[in-house]
Length: 167
Image (cartoon, rainbow, N blue to C red; front, side, top):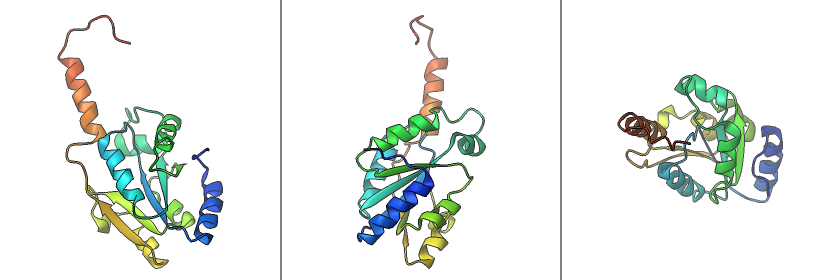
């Protein structure tokens, strides 16, 4: 089953699911290098409802947010990996700097972000509350971040002699 949808098709799916009485959870992010913090977060987020929609930042928006060297993994591959997770029901890619327009378009029942976000700073929080939805903040796994992984790789690469076997 394909779990990656453009926003217009996803809207149709979500409307059908809501008519069936399903609670739709929404989260978003770059998810550049998938790590345990991501998988635990998504698993916990999924428990808040029936369907978890993950809005993935496009390559262009990741570069704008994180700098010219990011993302490490292209959006199509990030979407494929995230769609393979059992906790994620649907993935859509968005190109805007924030997911506000997408949130307003899809109208999820719950918006979820990680513990590195204060609830007052979560984009779309006010919007989701206007239609009776709620906002949830999940605890973060200390030290688990793509930036930390990249820094560790750079330290390791900078502190060893090349073996000639790099691929």
